[in-house]
Amino acid sequence: MLVIRAAKLSDLDALIEMARQAGSGMTTLKPDPEMLGQRLATSEASFAETIAPEARDYMFVLEHTAQGRENASIAGVCAIKSAVGLTEPFYNYRIGTLVHCSRELDVFTRMETLYLSNDLTGSTELCSLFLLPQYRAGFNGKWLSKSRFLFIAQFQHLFTEKIIAEMRGYQAEDGTSPFYEGLGRHFFKMDFNHVDGLTAIGKKSFIAELMPRQPLYVDYLPQAAIDVIGQVHTSTQPARRLLEQEGMHYEGYVDIFDAGPVLQGRASELRAVRDSVLATAVLAEEGIEHEETEHVLIANTRLDDFRMILTRAVAGATRVALTAQELQQLHCAPGDDVRTLTLITRKSAHG
Image 1 (tube, rainbow, N blue to C red):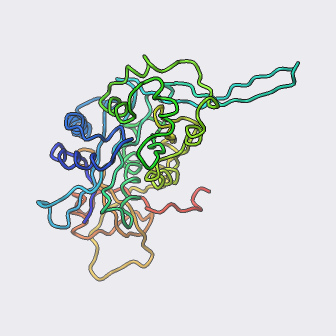
Image 2 (cartoon, rainbow, N blue to C red):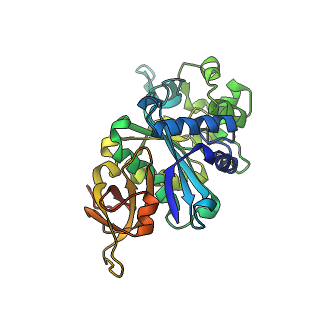
Image 3 (tube, rainbow, N blue to C red):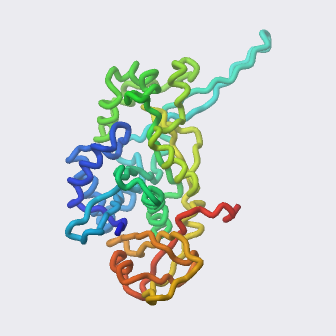
């Protein structure tokens, strides 16, 4: 059985191996034991509420417990950073427009530009989403991605109104970034993976030192670089669609290295915040099945021991029938509060 739970320091070795498989371009998930160890320590302190809300970094793991808890394995990971850019700079390119006009020559031009910005500083960030290849089946990917929205819905007071997600930018088959090769390499004089690794461990001062502050004209870039601005990595396309289904959208901000899009949303407008339901858990009666059930995310309401499962239940019900095993997975007892959200977005809802 699969369960999403708060990550622990004991998950370090599994996450290091997972980060190795994630490959380049995932700045927040690198196989660096010191960095991941610090993140896990921060995550434990976040769930325990022993650090300030704006400093928190909530990491979640998808755990496979089919063989028993003593043989549990980690299948995936995702995270929520409460506020980015408060202790170190958070850079993006904002795509803007400059207009040039000459009445005498009857020439009017609009040109796209890239502005180095810190506009998204302080936003809550969804990050570090990765699922092992052998688990990329059924609803596992959807569930893991959408679990963060249900967590935000339950603990909305801990997060900012602006939610962002930096998506991994497009890479060629050989692993190179056309955008970085067309722009960043001219200023940084090093390989993409080296630059990405430096930012992953918090070394970002070189960005302000080496990148020009004046607007950069997009048309001056090689066509290969222009074509991938705002485009995601091939393996990231499903993740982008899932985020957009939950209320995130692209507003013209991109990563400064690979030009991957930054999706944005307002917490109050997220589907999970609008549509999730606080319900009471009850023990399911054997032999009784409801016909009108669908796949539903169900989470307990405990910050210090947060857990979530995916099961079939009656959508929107104020009482949710759970088996003894499901209650155990949630660390709940009959009568406890749980928060529920349908896995599949209803197209007609609020539309």
